[in-house]
Image (cartoon, rainbow, N blue to C red; front, side, top):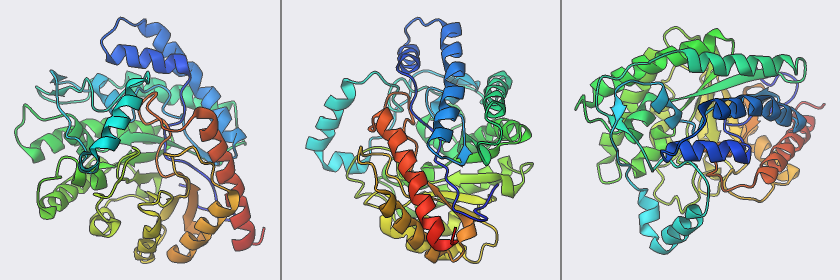
Length: 390
């Protein structure tokens, strides 16, 4: 995993805008409509080189495939795991339920979108869960490798995302194991295949773990904090087991409180989970510090000083508004974060979350998303001149 040796490198969190036709095909398939699978697969493959080129055009150093060959950052796994079927149910967010007028407004806005949602058409575990076939992830990696080869010398590093077993366990209800630890163990063993395949292709692995913060106001909204922290401990242990064959310096993890516009006033403070999260055997942490609910929590990064070599991909771009942050604002955010971490080489500039975590469900218009990434790069250049002197 690359660090910021002579300037602050730029990256992002994973999902990026998808072409409208690709989004339409994903949404239709999830609704159970008949879709030409060959057409969908070809549209997904074709979107990858376009997406990589756009990242490079925007000045992004550490790029990925934009998750173009997936309908969602997490529920694409429904096609890669055995034992899933039926119809599951997802808890609503506690903060949204506090504000019924806002919740109804969001429902109206979302109903007009052609999109994939992580709350609708969700399966549950009805049988033994294991990884079915590496073919899909191998194809994704190969398509991404080809896109990178076409842009040799234009980027610094490449990463690839995969979900946390804890996230899958909270979205896909367990109706088979009837035991949290057994279900987590099965999901962890299955995801181990995907983690190791991504690493074998030479990409930095990013494990997406919104569950380690978000589920406090989702699945654990009516339970004691201690129950949630026990869950976090169990998930971290399961991820560490799945990563046993992947070097720590080739893994980063992403934590957030849910990539949705909302009050977020039920979000758990970062300090409550950070001591447990730091036990994860990874070399980097992708954390959100741009949105107004968590912008102050960069102070918690002082806890990373004792963890030699760990990097922070600091979210300095809000992925939930169509306001393009001024480069000077980004530079100032980065300077504060560098001061808190204590070492500029360990800080990368990033986004709070993905721009299109489920196809078509973004709050940010595609052209604005690219504009935000360009501003991110400009802000990182300004901060680099002040910090590194070049």
